[in-house]
Length: 305
Ligand code: FPP
Ligand code: MG
Image (cartoon, rainbow, N blue to C red):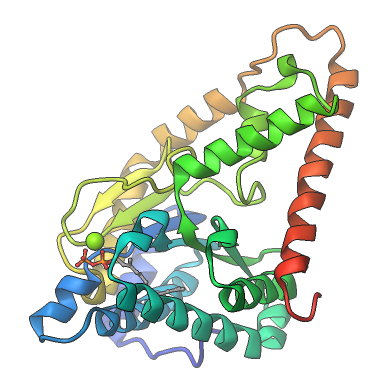
């Protein structure tokens, strides 16, 4: 079942392409910087919001292709903190549109739950209008119980540097309250305090529109991702571009897996004398941060969960 409606049909050639690529290893997680919507709109003298709507249609199709391929997790950059500096009309239009998308997902909550689909919204939600905060919190709370057979992570009011700073801020609070010691903080603990620690690290990061930049997106999480810069605007992104990105991953994935295992094996805390006691402090700290975030979401949500 598709994320947003009925699944679109594939041509026989598309089915062949998908099946050929499926003979190789399939990435568990793909992240997309959906860039180029305004340039696309400008070509037809349309307002920017029309470009974003075309971009959303492309996202819905891309999510279907990811389901066909067996990709379990997709993360999209839908609104950067920097985007608040755009003209007010465009920002308001994007906010209204995002609210509609949340409502649409919420109307499908039963089907999403039946098929194990979980929606997460990653970002500083306090920067959003209260109505958008409520809609975002509602869909997150409504689907968070799913095992995450398939996850859609929507980065909204998102900045990777803010995300890392927020994680450090939470850890600092835990130190001040005596929940952990400064020496307990290592890279693994910082990673567990990012917006959605339950998310896997993306295997591929795709950016469209020919720009070769990360733009403050998932800077921590993409340390070992294969990066694919695609020279078309996001609304022009096709299945063939996606398959090319997966093929690039398949050529690189063994070295990526090796590099990831190497960093995951590194224990930053050298003094292991009180390992168990430290683990207890770390667990308490993570529980404290988790509870704080769930309380914040429940506060934002309309009907709770
Ligand atoms: C970047 O293109 C795109 C955005 C800032 C918005 C992306 C939003 C959508 C595709 C709608 C989907 C929304 C949700 C909530 C899932 P740009 O505006 O930077 O275009 P440009 O590079 O041509 O200026
Ligand atoms: Mg852009």
